[in-house]
Image 1 (cartoon, protein in one colour):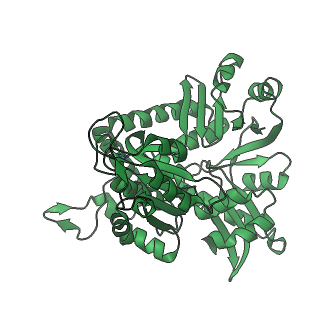
Image 2 (cartoon, rainbow, N blue to C red):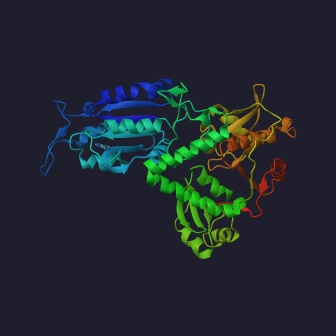
Image 3 (spheres, rainbow, N blue to C red):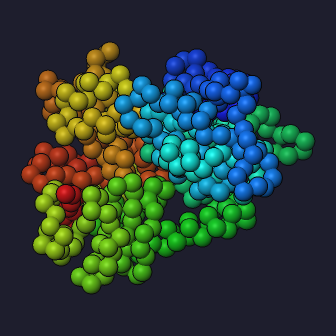
Length: 456
Ligand code: ADE
């Protein structure tokens, strides 16, 4: 990812970003940034970049020409027009979701305003997003840019040392962080909570969740209300757990947003994927209006599936069996040498997993969501967690099949998820008898209603 910052104070950006974690990431080449001095592009003999506003009023305005020329110098060689963000208190408020979205870009351009702002005509020409970091007015866009770059950069693989997948980590998106403690055990007469010294992961996780809930309730009632709504939906869906586990886990893992929620009429969204549960044709039709045309849809209801085909002209249908694991204890594993995979295994995965979509595999490897089985230094198979939470992408080398490698890979993933309080589940594509047999062998329960992935 490359960050381009257009500013009148380039040294402020360089000093701010050059140190600490971001500076190290730039040295490693994981991210890069440049601070472009707008003043370098002025055609004015005296280096002036500002002038009085037409119609009168207080202060000075940055003129269009130097801003436009600086922008052209940055983007001239790029094949695609990059997202260009103008920092202004009048913009859309920056949040974690926007950070996640922007972290997917290859290039980002930021424009820092000063004085009373920038000539509107050049903003209209180059800006794609108007963003504020909060409801207060600062003297310029430099501090907001640094805040944004910090939040975006830490999501880019390699900037932080994250070797545990976000999907397998215990995290509750709608809750605040639990309190943490380090040595000494007693400080200033205050003792570290006993449970954290117990070594019992399950108890520790339960305590942390409870602390997170309490803290969120006190400090962020708005977030807590969202969390509570999701918990209530999970409870309703749990009446048919085998059928609805995909929706329950999406919410439980903090991945989904609630688009519609009325009794058993529930529509969830995760990126371009929608999961729907409808009471009848009427309510299904109502919820469809909220789903974009190019979205992917999951349903476990035959009447919804038929509506999608006959009324909404969908043509892509993948029929699956849903399987879930209700165990609380770890499964035994015959093959123990299983490790998290990184981007260097991209070619291997692409070669051996015939449903692989390159962008998706890259993203999964970067998210540390794929795991490989090894024989010495040699990789002999892999498995992964799809971005919406289901397990899949299982492959084992010919020579190692029927030797328990596949079962060990899946067991590894199951154990990882159980230890973090998740319910492991997967979708087995119709006709894959081998996979069905594996799920039954591992003790997973199969849903008696099919599940369809629907697209086009
Ligand atoms: N420029 C001045 N104040 C700002 C704010 N709150 N957010 C973004 N840019 C700004």
